[in-house]
Length: 262
View (tube, rainbow, N blue to C red):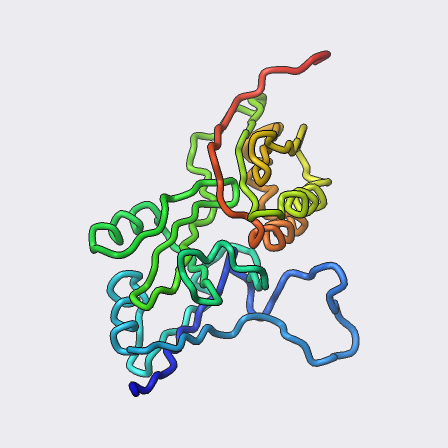
């Protein structure tokens, strides 16, 4: 029987990149005081491979991971100036399909669309299309051993700056994993109660899809919306809600012009 080995890939399994050794505090989490011996962050990711040499080569060729002679690499937190957090979650794994693996690793990338096109051109097994949302852009690919990889690019506001008097709006559809829509709505509502510059944040259930919901946002300007994604409460909501999100539908930016009485 072929011996298996461990492929060691140090990575931040990240929705957002943290500072050294930090995780986002959750309700009920130990937040200081006497040390109790607890996990403080993700130190590494270790993959078991039937063919370690081949799998290392695939990650190096297609994902650009600088695999060293010892069999892995080290991603320094200092490589990314963005503030954020590392997501750790246990769920039912519905979003891991079509992989049968009991895990999925999320990697940050610098240009998702270019990377997904290159993966297709190189004959890699890309899963679905790129999905855009206010949380960033997501894409997926299967490695040669059938593990589903999630690739994530942080939200980038590269549009021309709007005039101060121009309000900014977003209307988008989100789909929860089956049976978890109400739970996802509760998390989103809890994490978005106090956002400076937010004039309206409405979550509505889609009457034609039991797992879908619509989010309609109105902000005093684009800059306040971008700044809201760095709020601790919003980042905590993203971390808690992400495992319950199956995908994103249409997304439209709008320029709100008024409402009754205004």
